[in-house]
Amino acid sequence: MNDTFEISDFLPYLLNQAADAAALEFQDYYKSRYGMLRTEWRVLFHLGHYGTMTAKDICAHARLHKTKVSRAVTALDTKRFLTRSILLQDRRHENLTLTKAGRRAFDDLAAEAQSFDAAIMEQFDNNERDTLRKCLRQLAKL
Amino acid sequence: MNDTFEISDFLPYLLNQAADAAALEFQDYYKSRYGMLRTEWRVLFHLGHYGTMTAKDICAHARLHKTKVSRAVTALDTKRFLTRSILLQDRRHENLTLTKAGRRAFDDLAAEAQSFDAAIMEQFDNNERDTLRKCLRQLAKL
DNA sequence: GGATATTAGTTGTTTTTGTAACTAACAAGG
DNA sequence: CCTTGTTAGTTACAAAAACAACTAATATCC
Image 1 (cartoon, each protein chain N blue to C red):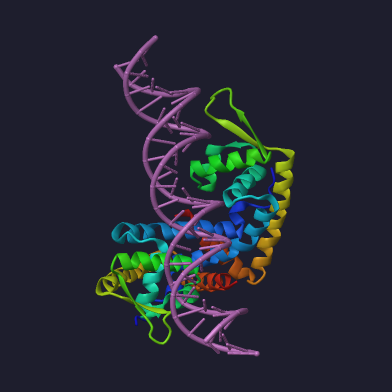
Image 2: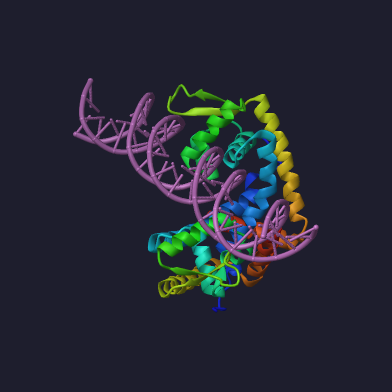
């Protein structure tokens, strides 16, 4: 009918398909193993990687809405993966810190993520990898 | 804390962030202008681009679940953007065809998508564009 | 000091998705 | 024909996301 423009060439579509495909396998891992949702995994990652921080910090850094973070923190708290401590200077903030169990989960998942990432990237050569990451970073910044 | 692995380097995360960012602006367009959801836009695109086809065909080609397509078709039908006609040979299938209004919406959105895509790609050089699309296609296939 | 505005985080309500069960039509083997 | 199986599509219910309204603490301006 109209052959001037293919949807599989449309960047937002392509990005979305690629993102879905890439997320799938890893998602199964943290879901079945720890009963975590994607936002929980991201929050866990931030705390494990950057250390103690507030929900606000996570929102800003992970580009997540505060309600999503709030619910993820509640879930991780219920799982005893983190502890909350209200700051004396400003009782609106609370510092979030991983527990031992939280850190174990983080260590496991981070290692898994890393090897998962490497496995995906294996299909590309060095030039492609660099270009891909560079372009994606630039797009994510918009 | 742990600096061996950055989350912003984790491909599923990066892809997701890039996909979100890229989808945002265009999403606003079809949402505010036509009250469409993403799946509706995709179904509309398929019908506009490939012509009359069944829901099943769209599922296979767009990699969408049949329930999502079913709901999108209902929504597009309500908006009078398509008509359904049951096939005489096999009354389980129904052919979906855009109405005049549906085609107008498609023409508008396809043009918009195309220039939107071009605008995004402008920030990359030719080599980057090719590599990006090639890698994304490959990832999407998984 | 006290009204007003901000900020961090939570809760409630509505949309949207995901999953599974369902209906209706057809196919195939006996 | 008539059971059994398969297929296209819908519907019902549960999980998750989006959005708005809220609470509690602090900051600011008069």
